[in-house]
Image 1 (cartoon, rainbow, N blue to C red):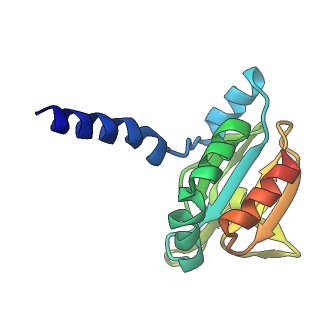
Image 2 (image 1 turned 60 degrees about the vertical axis):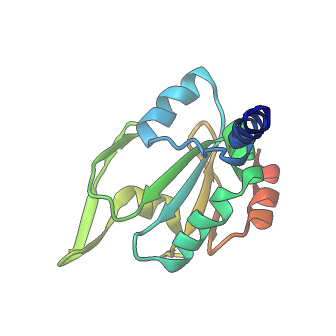
Length: 154
């Protein structure tokens, strides 16, 4: 009986460190939180059909080191570029703009993911607490690559 107790104790002790959760926020939440506790924002701009986006979600953003670094130093926003919900951010209302039947892009995705007149998925954009863009990158980023970027923009 004692053996089972110790096994369960060790199991429950190990769970919190192994199952760290990335705190995600909405644009509206980040705007309010940044007034009380200013931190930069990391915006992960993706779509439901993007394979590289899913790879980043399932590898880069599940890495415990990335999770800890983001939770401690940034506000993280995961943003679907095809979201149809109006977003009120930085004194503007951003809306989904249809481009055909069942296609389109959100105005905020266009504002945050456009590099050289192109929007490509996935895009990682880092904003200062004053909403200015300090970094943008189109492409899959590994945990190591993202950590280097985050350390430089912190």
